[in-house]
Image 1 (cartoon, rainbow over the protein chains, first blue to last red):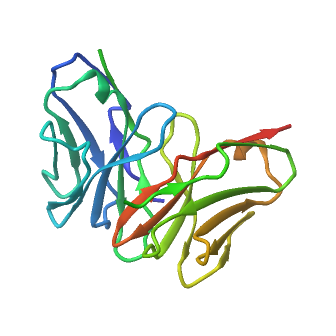
Image 2 (tube, rainbow over the protein chains, first blue to last red):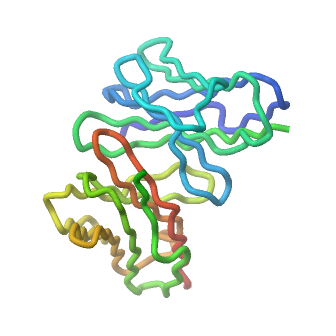
Length: 113
Length: 110
């Protein structure tokens, strides 16, 4: 069964550094998402992406965040200057058209020191 | 904004018993609902979904019930097994925008 893959599984970075989290969504999906989950809390929406542009973003997704689909398979989340509070699990997800569930990757655990 | 919440944060059941996990949603426009299971260190995994034109849907050992009148969603797990121990989230969606509840932790006692 096709799945969403994310790399790396764990990223440790120093405050102020840039990080890029990578995702390969399911190949025939058209909607792409990034979510984050702080330990013990609920999954929070960051951004959705469709037709090569951001379709919606949350308050969390400020100017320090950006997304890109550089080719036909990868979908990346960049945090320009990380802060301690960016430490969380970051999940990539994708879905097809119509009533279609989100399929999640296993996440990247980002630790900012 | 929309909110999706759960009645109980933790549910403990005996192995072999049935489990019922509840969820309330607030957006009347939501037309598609999904239950996810999240095991420790993993991403949410799709369990079962239901469209707003249905009130019940069954899968393998799982049943989802939707009551649109009171905006309530439930997940029933039959003959709960130790492998069912996880956090369960409901999600409501409309126009490809998904909202998640905070989750219920299911503990299955052997």
